Amino acid sequence: MSKTVSFAPYNVGRWFVWGGAALIFAVLPLIFTSGFAITLLSQMGIMIIFALAYNVIFGQGGMLSFGHAVYSGLGAFFAIHAMNWVGDGRIWIPMSLIPLVGGVFGAIFGVIFGYVTTKKAGTPFAMITLGIGEMVFAASLMFPGFFGGEGGVSSNRVVGDPFLGVTYGPSIEVYYLIAVWCFVCMVAMFAFSQTPLGRISNAVRDNPERAEFIGYNTQRVRFLVLIVSAFFAGISGGLAAINFEIVTAENVSAIRSGGVLLATFIGGAMFFFGPVLGAVIFIFFAVALSEYTDAWQFYLGVFFVLMVMYAPGGVASLILMNLRVAKFGLFNRLWRPYGKVLSAGFLLLIGVIMLVEMSYHLTLGFGTGGGMKLFGFQVDASTAMPWIVAVLVTGGGGWLFHLMRREFMREWGSVQAVIEDRIQRGLAS
Image (tube, one colour):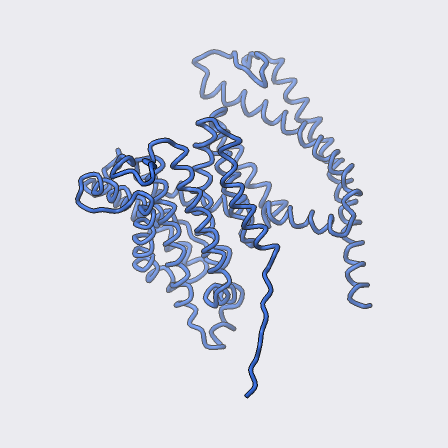
């Protein structure tokens, strides 16, 4: 009797990547120890789960949703009610498992809303999700008994008996709870992408007619994938409820849905780690940059437009293209063009920031007078001189950037031609 013996070697690179990710989660709060940094890292962890969950339907399934905050927001509302019930002694759930409450109810609403939305694909699907998002947001203000009205629902995460001395009172304990859930969810969503359902969702995204021809029900595939995505989105909502101890109607709003779409696209929807990068960048704009300027949404919008125009594959695609150049040993040809184009871009950025900040100050903060601090210098935005300097810096930076960008693109094209030639010769030999 013959017996087939197979051997599947360990993927060392994959273990190295996941081990490195776990190490980064563990070490980051030891390096960045301030309260603001811990808050920033916690929000990045929550957004990473949300963006990866969104990419399960967007990047892998090809479903553009304008209302995905419905699942994270409703998960957050049920999670914070569970926290209050635990505090009242009506139920017993360890605080560490409260995110699962959000995940379960996110999945339940994925079943309810997904049954309607996934009957259509493409643009109709996107429009239906937009309508459901608006419907749930309106309902959140219509039923204050559950949603808490405009003030939302608040809670206290320090409830129940401490587990191994952990009370989740200090923000560092909440961070490590978020980090553990973030890591587990990342591994689970990556594993899902390798399952038959994850693979066939790629096929439904790329060619639904052929998927139907070989016997798959594309509507059922979209429906199941959306439920999985809603489950992980609900977990992110549960973690947000623990982190902020309050959930409001804003959690199910179109603003939140648009934010996760921006984060996913900026990072790169066609790569698994793209939404991770996008979530970090988005939280940097929304939390860190907003501490310094009221114009952070303007900068985020400009950054998003530039990414769509010049790098539609997101930040992940830029990294992979440069790694490809480095793999063929040609990155030394790009150092100088990179230095020139980045220097010119930095000068252009300085000029644009000057114009934007002075405009914001004159329109929104005029009551405080024309005086303001810009890059550490005191300037008077109501006088002509700062504007003349800003226009000259912007114009000069734009002109230099145009010249340097053309030089960079010539060298980049030459390097890509060399790589393609080497690949063709390698295939031919």
